[in-house]
Amino acid sequence: MHRAKLFVGNLHSHVTDIDLKKLFSNYGKVKLINLVKDKGFGFIEMSTQDEARNAQIALNGSEFMGQRIDVDAAMPFTSSGESPVT
Image (tube, rainbow, N blue to C red):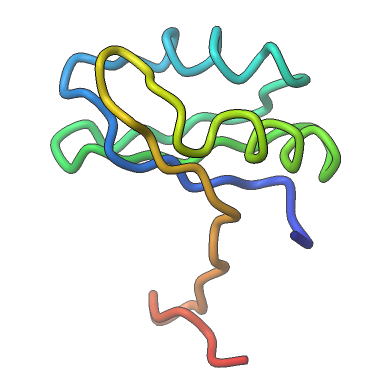
């Protein structure tokens, strides 16, 4: 993982920014939360790559608000909104 930004998927429809901050704060400082509520996913930016990695390892596949969540490194986007090819 090269970035401190995480993708969080399969979120419960009632999850809030505050819920996510409480959850991810167990692994470090949460700098930014971008929740796309109607789609069931969001992005979390942690202070450091190590904090993001620890949160990813601990939370990926865990149960949160009755649903198994997916936590992975967020993919960077180009200015066109497309994911870059590596």
